[in-house]
Length: 65
Image (cartoon, rainbow, N blue to C red; front, side, top):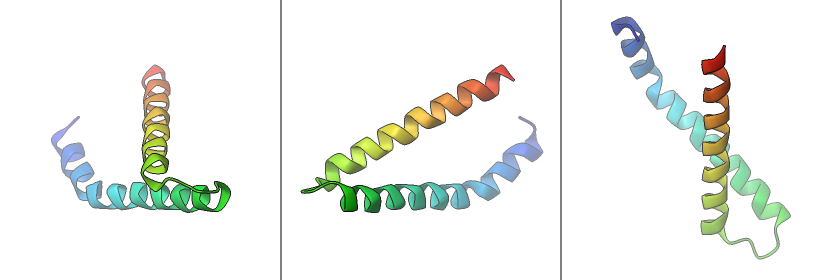
């Protein structure tokens, strides 16, 4: 990654973090609606696991291109 790319991605860090936070909150709400007696700690663990798996899949597919 070039120096300019590093600078640019640093500029986006806070926005990326906020975007991911919003995704987590959205799925947390969906799970709360759909799962009786929802365990929020377990829900968060599952959401983070799913996001991590999705990022790995996306990264793997983008490297092949």
